[in-house]
Image (cartoon, rainbow, N blue to C red; front, side):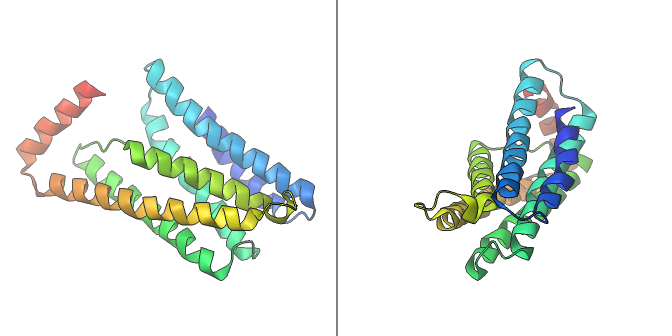
Length: 193
């Protein structure tokens, strides 16, 4: 249910970019932040109560990608990112697409790829960066809000490259293994989950 709420928030966050005024920016930031927190809460509750579902495993990454991709697109479209900050946004988007494709391919091989701790930190920094960038000029005048957001976005993009490379290496290792070894690995990962 929390995953579905994140998907439903995306059009509202997008729509807020078309409303002028500081309140619209703060409203969009609040919605984006709430969606980011529900992502963590949803995963935490599912693991704690062992209520992970197939539909949840399918929709959760889609909800995350939609939220991040749509918001980065809107920030770029509405000129809230400097020309230099478009590069880390593209790095983040490309990594999300590539890792999603890799996960999907490996799922077909019955190989799970758990999320690394560094990838979780990347997500936190990325979400904070995007939230700060949404607020932008509506933030406190004594703070360089846009510069802070863009710096965080560069940090997130750097971590994106590292974690993307880690996932790619792990995926290539699994693809290079014979099918029987992959089957054994799959059974081991199921017992650990």
